Amino acid sequence: CRRHHQPPEAMAWFTRQLDDLHVDDDGKPTDTSIQQANVEENISQLLLEKQKGRAFGDSVTLKREDHIAYLRGGLKRIPSGYECLDASRMWLVYWCVHGLDLLGYTLSDEEAAACINSISKSQYPTGGFGGGPGQYPHLAPTYAAVNALCIIGTDEALSVVNRQGLRHFLSQVHQPDGSFVMHVGGEMDVRGAYCAASVAKLCGLDFTDLFTNTAAWIASCQSYDGGLSALPGLEAHGGYTFCGLAALHLLDATNVVDIHRILDWAVHRQMRYEGGFQGRTHKLVDGCYSFWTGGLFPLIHNVLQKQGITPAVDGWLYNEEALQYYILQCCQADTGGLRDKPTKSRDFYHTCYCLSGLASAQRLPVKSPSVPAPAAESSGVMSMLRRFLSSPEQDKTTNVLCVGS
Image 1: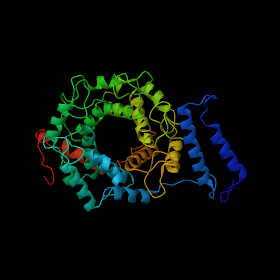
Image 2: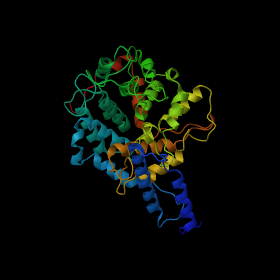
Image 3: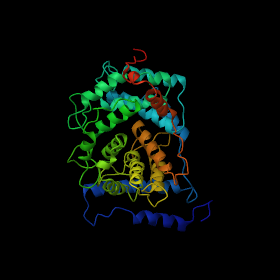
Image 4: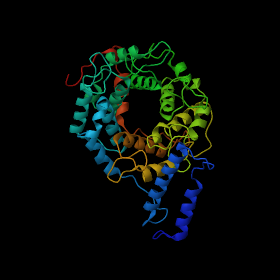
């Protein structure tokens, strides 16, 4: 069809393609199928509305500047509705800083200093980070804080981490069976293993005795259907599968799980109508799983290559274009920020992970060993690794005072 108008036959074809992919409840509707049908109808109406007045097949674009403005605003002042996330302040910083980094925005000196000051005040005196100032250390905000500091990547940022105290905190939450509780006396799930492995790796901590039995415990979380669950015997979930497999990568122990069953489970989480991912079987699409589930495929690809298997596809083992289309068409808010799905509101969490999934979908595997891997987007992580791994062993346990302490 011609690019300057919308021929009726093109729109009819477009509508038929959508209709062919609708959920089929076999005439026996359930709460689940009704909710799925509602989501598909919302998306159908949104896509048809967007097609009006635009040439059929025109590309869609990322509203980069609008998203940058939204995330920068989150580093200054947030709506009162976020008051319930007082224990997640480190996550708010990470979501905004990481999202901006993905968009190619470099924090101003003033913005970086404000982030560093906020993070440093949330470091617990004996090690680890709490969700905010004066809060007990917890693995989730510790992950968020350390990764945000890595992204900022300045000497001031990297000097915040009390590495001796951090290792002490990790040893406190490590359990004899290899699992990690999220905080002393707290709940246990596979997130803990990933958060611990991530910060330990980034900070160059000595792994000796820190992850004893952890790989075997993660393997015990592999469900009958292939994915990983929060704890052994529970339902497989996209976020927990990512955390478990990513932790095994960091521990160099991916051989303990059946990667082919993980792949089989993961490919069935991409929704055929929406193009995005769900987090669990029979659940709805959610933009955040663009990363938590979509981000599994580069990890799976790496494991398969180690096994001598080269996937016979030009890309990841899912439909990257469909995922990008869902993110760009259905998840972008008109005034910046991204969301779970149409009819939902934008927020910093979904903005961060929709952008993360989009970046992963656009960063396809290297086709040949002769083609160099692309340089890292952020120099912060590499700066931290160089700083800590090149320092003397004794320095790895040196207590570094917090900025502003």
